[in-house]
Amino acid sequence: MRLIVGLSGASGIIYGIRMLEVLRDQKIESDLVMTDMAGKMVGLETPFSEDEVIGLATRYHDCFDFTSPLASGGYRNLGMVVLPCSMKTLAGIACGFADNLLLRAADCTLKERRPLVLVPRETPLNAIQIRNMLTLTGAGATILPAAPGFYHRPKDIGELIDHIVGKTLDVFHIEHHLYSRWKDEPLS
Ligand SMILES: Cc1cc2nc3c(=O)[nH]c(=O)nc-3n(C[C@H](O)[C@H](O)[C@H](O)COP(=O)(O)O)c2cc1C
Image (cartoon, rainbow, N blue to C red; front, side, top):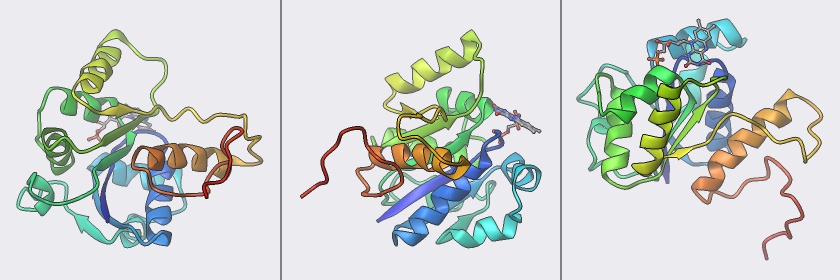
């Protein structure tokens, strides 16, 4: 089992870092690709270094290496998440403008009809951004805004982050205990 994890330069880079930690702990392989701005956001928003983030992934792919296996639809994987997903990266995927490896991997994920989950943080949204989201939804992607719920009574920021990471994993039917489901019975 392997999942492609794209990190782009939006606020909320901690969501992507947490996703890599959870995948590592669940023994699910991760293929990490991060944009230059994502690398900068790691330093701006978290105590992690870029190398520490890279170290959480099973494999790391340079964002401009189009010889990477991620540039081919033939690379077998469960699908791809982009978290956080900047509006620029979202626009690039929406119009098929694959000028970096993250965008190319997302393009391949869509054309191979694998799940693609995009986690935007931006707020408020303009009409162009909303149209891009509609285009992507129509193309098969899941737009999963980083808007955590509060019905599970989160005690700290970690639980808010885990709610979004858990909702993202739900799309791939990956079992986890990152948040309590509303009135759900445990699976037998
Ligand atoms: C502190 C900071 C926060 C940012 N937050 C966001 C954001 O939440 N959403 C967004 O779309 N862009 C955000 N940006 C702007 C992006 O980094 C910028 O558009 C960049 O070109 C994105 O490139 P990428 O998609 O290749 O990573 C932020 C920039 C900075 C410096």
